[in-house]
Image (cartoon, rainbow, N blue to C red; front, side, top):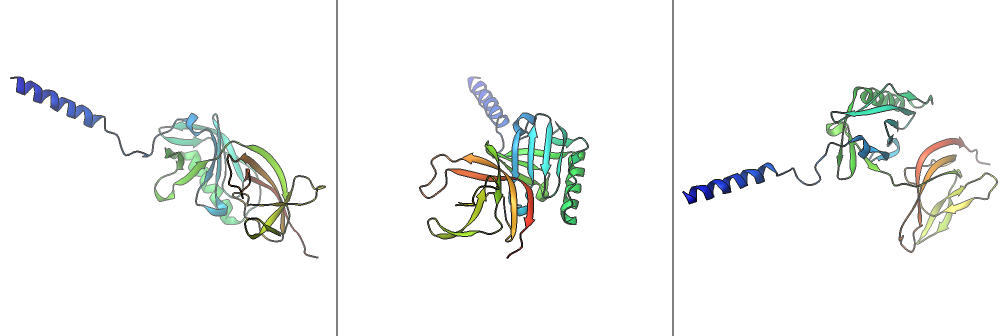
Length: 222
């Protein structure tokens, strides 16, 4: 009788243990809206990378052309936007089609989840993967149409930047994350400046991350 009681207790313990087993570490989790707050940048998408910002119950997103923004909710694991307002820039047709498709998907509701600190928006192979951007200070800078030779660890071509049109150009040792300038085009950018803790001896103590291209102009060569 005692053996039967012991076996029954062991079986119950094993069943309880199995019930408590969860999926592998790092598997996707259904988030709350508060967990999605902040600024996110799409990964592995090149110049067309989308930027997403969620603040309280509003979202704004830009996927290479116009910025779209409006109220948003999170229901049954889907991020859903009310009809989105948008800026009215003229862009290449493929960029405008991408905006329109993304707007329709968000208004219908897109599955959203968190996986290893990254945000996944959509399903399957078409899901957009985002990383959260660090907090930083917003700045406006001008970028010259041409780079200049400079020397860091090795000879390189540096961007020329300045905060004001009346200031002389200064060399920027490094790149601006998310920014791919075209030769012969001058820019005014809105960037996020993030401090880097304990940078290497040959690296900058700040990071610049592209937030928005405010304006650009083709500069004629003399």
